[in-house]
Length: 148
Image (cartoon, rainbow, N blue to C red; front, side, top):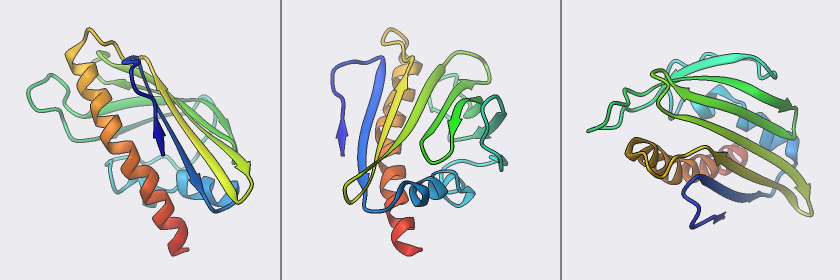
């Protein structure tokens, strides 16, 4: 797994799975995966333009109470899951793209998130949460693939 270092406005990861894109996609959009980290996520359809909301742990010492609203900005089955997440108070807005690319021996997943403001302490805390949390999600996808 590779993560970009230096640009505080983004977070980037790359992960390789030894499974075809359709299997990785099925895990990526599964409630089984998301239910492990977030609550109240009841989305069963992943389509461009659909909205969603969910809750995560609040940031202690900040105004973030853990409530997120979002919308899918682009969805291409087995290829791309892009969405915009905004804290319910509007203080943080992040655009994320999860891009699947078949390659020899499996599928490469690129995760790109943009929109972090380095001058905003809460946004940098949120960025840190993504830096720590998303690798766990990427590893868990691999575990769930092996279990199937």
